[in-house]
Length: 178
Image (tube, rainbow, N blue to C red):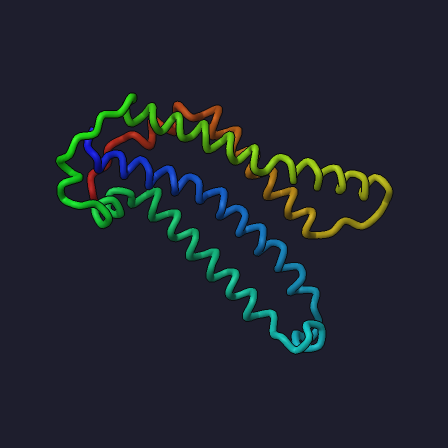
């Protein structure tokens, strides 16, 4: 395996991790939308601040993150060529496993990290949500969006672990630079 191949693997794994970050940023947008829509006059309820600029900033940051993630996942070869030296294309590196196996291991670890990172807060928020709903209290829209995005993250973690072989087979395919 060439050194450049190792860079490709690392870049693609970073892109996969950024998917969970994108979901977290999406949570921010989902949390902000109801607050933005429920405010009356933007300058009365927010101490003179226009909330639209904050919302646009959050959306702009989200879109940049989505684009960056897409580039890392689907334009890996081009990114690798930009950051690597010419000697990296020829220099061999010995690894304990093939490209597909490295992806598979990374997907399992990524799934586990995502689940372990998300699950504790998810359990606490779910318990709080159930207790409030069970006793007839209103539930915060932030809690709902947190539960939705956390559920998506946990499901993605489980899917990354369960389908690591299939996903790694797809990721390990060699694609020609377009």
